[in-house]
Length: 234
Image (cartoon, rainbow, N blue to C red; front, side, top):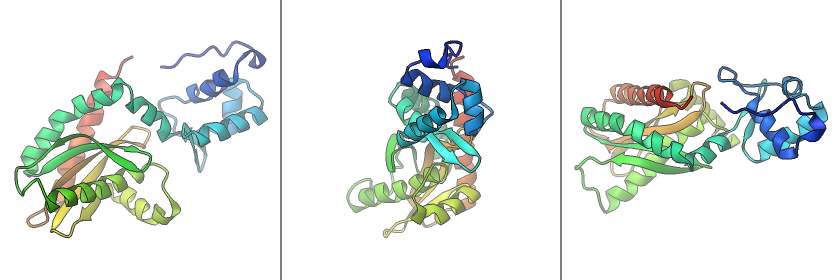
């Protein structure tokens, strides 16, 4: 947990300290906080809190929601550049392997960098061929599915909002390719509801059992989150 000195007078705190104090206000069980509550907890004037919120939103460290503001995906992206990203990969790898064994298809663990998909780990199926047009299509189809699965739980563009809302409701995203390939992706969700990462199952369209694949992928995602919580430093 982050500990900041809130006993100092507001005037004695630097602008950076005030911004960090806002971020530190959020407790594990809280998704959103109002401006008034942030001002109360930090003992800062509301106009100051309003200005800080705007800057933190611009940096992606806070996001506006229907009931106030919430911690932003930018915080996760900063963390992903630290050892946490390596820990995510290490924790998820056994579940990716198990998912690969059960589905007999390629499996991937990915994160978002802005709206771009970055694959942290992957276990490729030996068939069909892993080069040429199939490999190119694999990259496009996987990114399309897992990108939407994660964006559905992070701020997205208005043009995609309707589709992303549908993905969020159903809990998975599907993308198909010209070579009769299919990617099924699910988000790895933090308990507060935003996407830490995404898990994708990719392979030939023929013979795929969609909801069975979804259940297996969601099981791998849930196991990853549970294990992350078990090893989270106190």
